[in-house]
Length: 89
Image (cartoon, rainbow, N blue to C red; front, side, top):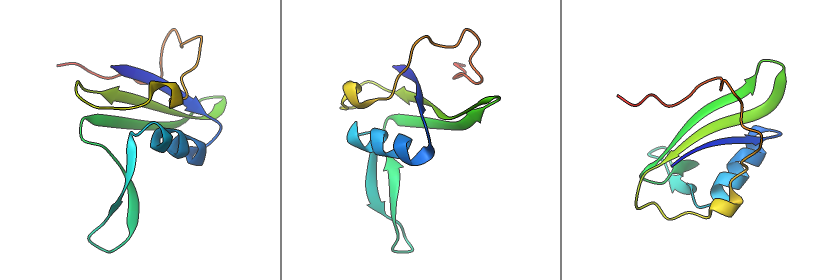
């Protein structure tokens, strides 16, 4: 499943993805806690798009990933020509 997401800023996006169960806290090898996507979730961080200063993310979720879709900051209408899309080989 592919999603186009938008929030006002990056921290709001991270909070929404964490609430949805897409990002989880993990300890890095340096002992720092970082937010990482769960296996099977792929995040394309776009950030601001042209004149739209809001924070944009493309999200791809593969089968078997358990998440709360209601927490994802989707929006309508979707762009007719998205800034970036997933490429399927």
